[in-house]
Image 1 (cartoon, helix red, strand yellow):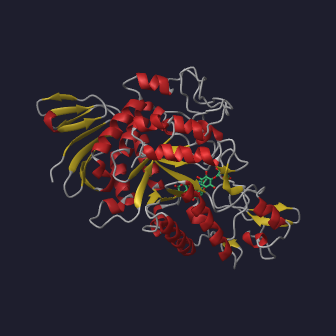
Image 2: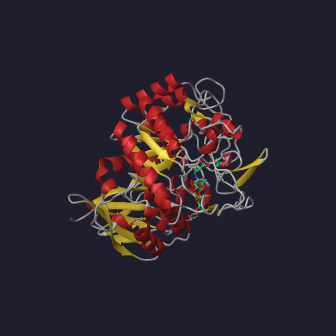
Image 3: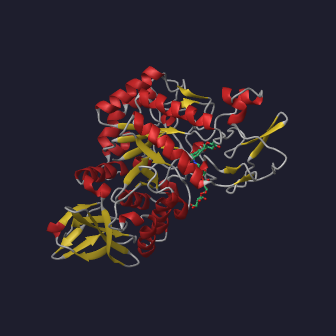
Length: 482
Ligand code: ACG
């Protein structure tokens, strides 16, 4: 599986209103298929007042700017014809303040009132979020409600079992429409408020119980539903959820790849890799698959983070060669830029994909002006297609190799050699083996390899007798021995 995280608003506009939509994505499924993408993580498309769609007003409706249910169904159909799966991002931890649920709750209507968390005399309404220092209690009329992600999004009260049934209905609704699974937003936040002591506190055991019941339900409707969880935390916390979900985003891995490249430190990469992908170094079966990614919509874009195309291309090489499930954030294949001031979903990381080099034209979304990816920046699909050395063509070539060796997804890693600059590791299963050389330095390096053993290289290598020269920030793959 090769995933593509897709933000519909910035993708392709089919009706000339400047906003990407279902029909637009349908038109561009060929673009994705041509790269080798076979799975899409679609950011929220439900009815919402927010540009990001994470605050939902109606869980059963689509955002009308994106199109109606029939257009969505047709998109799913067309994707399935091409063997592309689409997984829906479903944020159920909270709703929009303007949702009917919350508005009715404000009027003390049952059952909605009990679906939210209200302050009492034990509450410290000045309590702050443990990251970013934002307020978590918000005053509306004469009441305070709990909203971890801000005043626009009251948290749902999952102590209330009735709500569990409502959430099941929502999962069922979208599975019946044709989605292939879900990306479970904010999975560690379902129970993050201790109502007994009226204090913020993660209750991972309760979360796990909740998710087990939900997953059982989802699988009872669609037994091969793909489930991806977002638990953004240290590896010790991520570990608690091991085995619950089929795929879990590996946040620690995303940091170690970027940091080791920034520091040109192959030793750090190896040391940390063993810690953040432990299951891939042991003989035991892998429970939750590592959802590998470099950046997502909550982060500064890869090229802006690493400040160089050579480095960002190298990071993509690492991403696409490690075992696990790789996720490409839309625009990463074009080396788009985008810097977020705080770690959060802001428009600066979500600029429109440029289809043609002038930055405007049919299909182009223009809901947001260009700040980081101005026209003629050579990041357009048009330009990148033409240039054989573009990021797009490199990504395509590497995905092709990965798909020809799809066994890599469920394989094990073995470190063979490493020093400050180089890593030589093998990727194996019972019947296949390859050896990958990662050059973390900016300059070339020589290794003892015969030309006839080479399977893949990211940048031109020079071979003389038994010596092979690998350019800086590049990779070389050779046949392994079992
Ligand atoms: C998801 C979505 C995001 C969305 C929401 C809410 C959740 O991707 O777009 O926001 O629906 C936290 C949550 C995540 C959440 C992000 C934005 N992402 O856990 O579920 O915030 C620390 C915390 C994390 C925190 C992270 C980023 O521990 O919990 O994520 O910071 O802020 C090391 C540490 C790690 C630390 C990081 C970063 O890695 O190990 O613990 O993480 O460093 O310091 C959307 C919008 C929002 C809006 C909301 C309603 O983006 O603007 O308010 O919807």
